[in-house]
Amino acid sequence: MKLWLMLFATLAMTACSSFDTAYEKEVEYEYVEPDVYPVLSAVGYAPISVQQGADYNAKSLRAMKASKLEAYRELAEQVYGQRLQGKATVADMVVVDDGIKSKVDGLIRGARVVRSYPVGDNYATEMELDMERVYQITRSVNKPRRIKDVHYY
Image 1 (cartoon, rainbow, N blue to C red):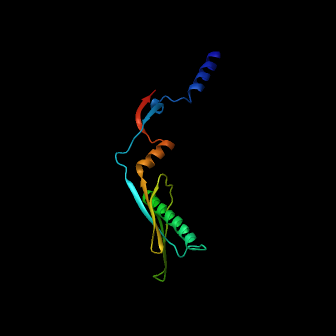
Image 2: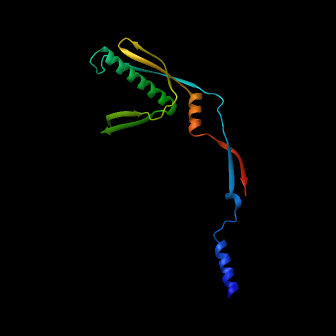
Image 3: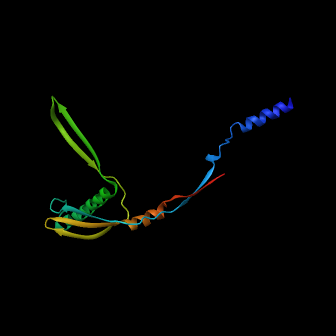
């Protein structure tokens, strides 16, 4: 009886263990650096006269800020793309309503203002995004990697 109990206990302990060693491995990664780093550029424009403000200087400052945000939006569009959503309504075989919405969503790090200047009644801001700088910033936050070696046990 004792022998059967020991045999059953041994069988019960090993029944849940895996005999397949393909799942038991250690993966070693190495870091990958791109060969070429592009430099993206964007220009944002904003009208001065329609900005809220008491005088021309206050309106210029608001237009400066708005043009910078527009340039950031353009950089985000280049990096992440633009999400488009279209809608068309048809009634009696005639298009009643047709519309499209666009959305840009992203995080831009490392961009720099190249130049900011007035152009007539508008304010323009030129920005530049060096992807090598972005790579260095991103690598300091979360390091990119690839499989270097796999050890099976």
